Length: 210
Image 1: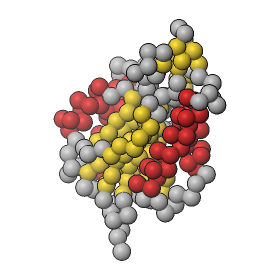
Image 2: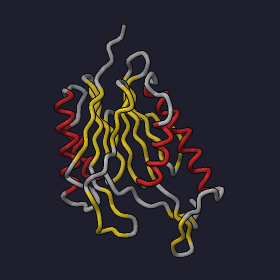
Image 3: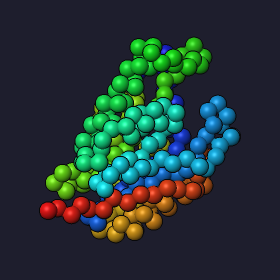
């Protein structure tokens, strides 16, 4: 890693959980005001339904992730499956990162080091043939990665990791997934000012294959 570059930590918690009954994505609602850590609001939305088959969650630098998301929103994604949406996010993130590293965008400096934005996307949903998939794309390493396990989390993840390894399984109903996702966020909020107990949750139900 280049010692002249600082990548900030992701100050949030978003999760995607799947079982044989469906997929749930959830995120806390806290927005930390940049450079004013103790100033925040709980009005942020970090999970979005892209279409009937795909949802996404966003963690990290809100301003820069929002730029990518707005470009995504301009695309025709109504018929895209989870892989198609994930590839578009990978492309847009790579284009954004190039702009920072080539100087088109101006990176901040701290202690004579450059500070580049750090954000991550979780993309969860169904492929064209009905298979469940969860992908991640991170601006620090902007390559699409498929996740093999039944849950994925980004941000302040220590508590979530422990609870999900103990309680998640493939037989949970979609309502049980929803409650579990909310619980891991609320438990994390008890020990981290960066995470709100207030949450947004979306469900992605299995498609009806014709």
